[in-house]
Image 1 (cartoon, rainbow, N blue to C red):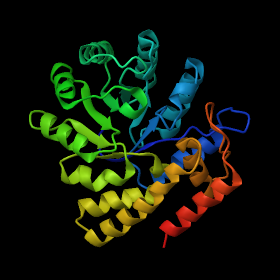
Image 2: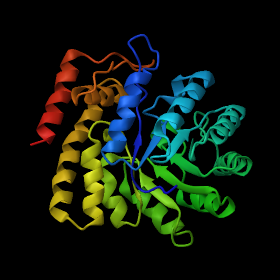
Image 3: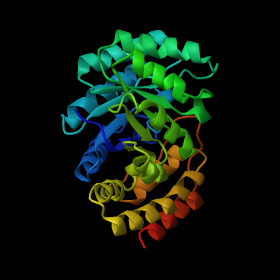
Length: 297
């Protein structure tokens, strides 16, 4: 199991009534893998982890592991404000064959660095699986700063990396400079789609980003172009991704916009997104379609 390059935090496709649509999930999973995605993260933010009960999450995990069938690493988000639920989900993932756990920093109360260290270390020490930290301070209210990440990596050998979803590449660069000096195998992914190149030239390992649901081939080709020093392709696809970033600003909740993009690109799915979210309007849908069309020029 090797993580690098482009990982998709996969949408959870549902019917208009809010039931998980496993038929279209299967089609979406296979499309992502066939288009060169290097790993799949289930129950991340875009996967709406916050809105499903444990039974639904476990049902989805069972399906995901079976459907992916070892073709790429399976990552699962297990973050929660209830530590007992985190441990229950983590143990379940271990028993079902998940490759990597993804743990968002404790949210809502914005705990101190010491409390965050204790929380994440407890999970790491009590589950025998690789653990990827998830830093999303805009949502969690809690920033995993470089010194804290360094300490977590030093004290917990199964904490193997971090997804840094901060709209400021210097934050990720500081993480890279601080942690990789002593732990060069520690993986550092950016969570914003347009930061692939900045991440890589700074010494990072790639992206875990939502638009890969919509245009997986663009991102896998971007990764290939960087590896092969194909600068023309790198520039072309980088420009296309910059245009696609506008999708995040259209719908009431960005997850719904990502689902609309997947639908526009050929998978006939519902754009239903769990509460709190408003249904996408026809006007918003057309705006997203125009963005996708413009990005292909």
